[in-house]
Length: 589
Image 1 (tube, rainbow, N blue to C red):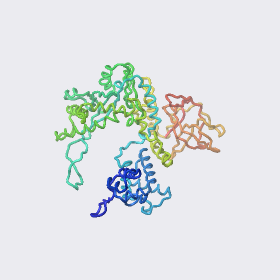
Image 2 (cartoon, one colour):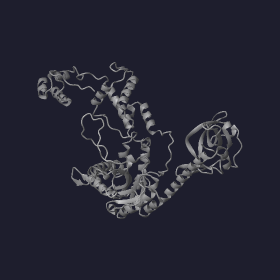
Image 3 (cartoon, rainbow, N blue to C red):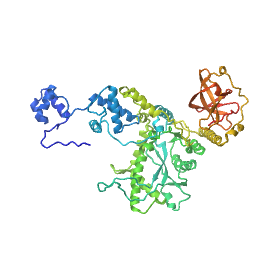
Image 4 (cartoon, rainbow, N blue to C red):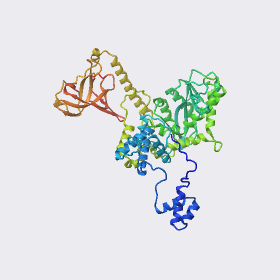
């Protein structure tokens, strides 16, 4: 990078602010000062004031920019728009973006090689507009989180608005799990200049301890609930500092129920009127015992919209980051005192956790222990829960305020929307860890049972599919009961839009293998060709099917085996199932 230094004895350049120049010119125009007196009073060269007053030499001093001011402002709007949508530029990408911008405008700049600006131009460009744009370290979020739109957040808040009625802030709680490790992290240290591999000798491991944290909108933090992966704790004194649960080091249904019974309910008993407990939608949280206890104790159990906790969860927004920073400082001091300790003994962990929370709670400006309360109150405010304000979350989404969309290329806006909101075509393995609960609405035991039954059906479907893959191809047909209502191969005139068919397709991977699928006809394209959408079996009897989104393909009349009877259409909680009178002879891949 170039470093510009002035040579000895050369003339002085601008040594005044633009505000001082404007003020001097205003007094000259109003007749308060002459040009000579204004030059002496504001320490501005006489020639500068004279030229500005008469409109001569109005260009900026030094070399002129390759792009005009209007063009650079248009570039800034494009850069900030891409960054707002989650696709910021690197230095090289900014160079390529500028080249495309110039070519689309039909502008050729001879200073640029192949009309592409160099790294020096990027540095100068960022320096000229450092009050508007600048380089920042990015935080990566997956596409599922980026796909959260203003419509889904608005729906969550509209449901939450009715749930929050007549509930005071001291009765609104947010819970979440986190973990802490015994690695103090990286710190800046002083080394000899030129050291290639700066290292510090300190023992640490990859082990971590899970915690369940819960806080209220009024700033009350419940005792942390520590979850050890162990069968017992030898030192029972540790349990006097914090709540401890000895089990597998993860929050399963039994662990969450124990936390709810031993930590949350005793605090909730002391609070009058209705309470609200809000968290994520992990299936282990919605056990029948917990939901029944919520109904008996007038507690509304609400979950966030999936993949939105980075926006809507108070603990994620304003609590966990300062908590982790305080923990790394505590564990660093512990490692420096106990240099031979490879991990944290369970008997020492509660004491360290208590020290971490005390250090975090200290407000260094006022020297008072109230920082945890301030963080919790700020978290509920930033997430729009208390006070109720959906705009505090919606304004963080790129499609909420789109006033400058008309000023930026509409094709760029559409491209960014497609990149951010289009779901991936990659099929991920289903983990069955989250329930499809309506966000913002209080959950009851009946809702949980219905959702769990649906989860069980889909789990059985996956097991059945796996079993079919392991069965010999020649013997598969013999184990399926064929419906007696299936007709013989129909003629083209009998097949209309909305009819259900049993078709056969050859496998492209296994030679000689033929699969059989049930489909619904979307439309007739031309003679002997049909456009259909696939249905997928949901049970081992192959009588219940579901509609597969975007599974559209074209078949010929030769692929049709038979015409299926009309199924019974059943809709539960917005999910549609197709129940045929008897089993369908399908063999799905």
